[in-house]
Image (cartoon, rainbow, N blue to C red; front, side, top):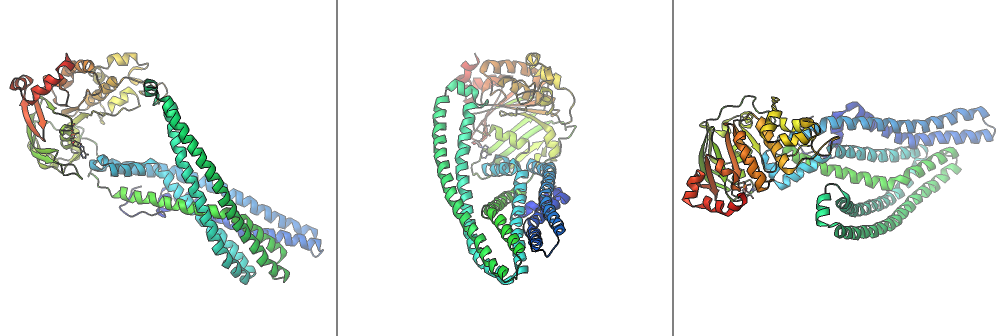
Length: 593
Ligand code: ADP
């Protein structure tokens, strides 16, 4: 399944279901419609037949045995109605499974290809989250609402058709008073539904606070800050407010639903009154009268609420489909889903030439005439205050943003002219906000190289994880995090080392470490840097940091300020120069002593 660049509407929910499972969607749609006809017109005819036969037997115009076929017809109709309901639910379950298999991957695949700017932009990220949260439920809710709405329409039409077939003028009279009364009752149903949704909002907030009070995720901070009593008070206030609202809603609901039921009962009564005349005049049998009146009673009971609920759900599905249309047209990076090349090209030189860059939706140049040149096999440190654009440099280097001015040359060739799979293979990165995968430690590390080489144990050793592995029950095969059976948690610093190990298994010739020690205290940071000699292993390495613990290891330090390089050279040279770097280093000196 693929998403098209088109304006989707609520009826497209049907199209998605059909594409995922054509036969079951047809069954899931048609069976409830057949069920509606059976429940109303056919049941009415079977009832009429039964009552009329019974009356004829009592009048001695028919034989006693004639009641059996009439009874069997009633039973078959009732049995059929129930069987159809079950068969339709079965088909619906199959549609659901097939949608999980086809729609969800299609959405994941589409979002994986989006230009990086959409991931960083708050509005488009919210859109992506809304669409990806539970697409199958959104689609199946839409399909169910359309089916439910069709069922209601079919019920009404089939009862009317039956009345028209009996006494056409009675149908006309019934139609003239039913429409306005039905409209009134539908409005009441809508209000009823909205009131319930208002109460739901309060319940969600109370539920969230309840989670803060009892959830595992919050336990450390709850114990440390002892905020339990304070949150408990807020929870109680919300609970009370929610409860009062709930009582009000229930009372309002009661009034509205009683009012609406009375209207509907009145319709049934007026239908019965209209049809009595034709029965007395022998235009209609008494059995048919009973069949029609009981069908109207049965149908009308649920109409007001169901009709407004299904319309509301159709419009909600419409909102989702509007989101989906916007989602489908977000710009994508060509070949974004291709894997990195298995054999990366060697990188001899890397050069920024007068690069200027501002983020989309912003006029501020974060990089403003940035130029530098890096050589293979050397170690570099980009330093500067927070927010000076160090991470932005890594985003440009790795091809996440291509709309920059100036040039970036790799081996003398502009970065944008390389295929994306080649760029992906050039760099491995450890980000400051690296991901923690709650899977086996070995798999956690292996994610760094899609062409997996089985070097996880070696990488773990070099990243200094031996001691941590020794304490894990199943060593490298222990699931990390507590969500899996037998899972074990590790410390923040150890997670950071796992992220580093992940970059070590990568065969990329350039390794970037963006604030790699941000989760560590200065002592652990110094220990990690002590091991970095091993980590660098002759590869071109770029440290990005506002902390200067790593800079002594670098062959060259580049200081960034105002979107440019303001100073560069070795640690000794820059300290002697006594400029910006020396000032930063002096300010941080005591952290590292
Ligand atoms: P550093 O790594 O030096 O701390 P960054 O490169 O992360 O700095 O950010 C540089 C500046 O760019 C900051 O002012 C930041 O607010 C801004 N910035 C970062 N990402 C975005 C974005 N996606 N959209 C707009 N501005 C951004």
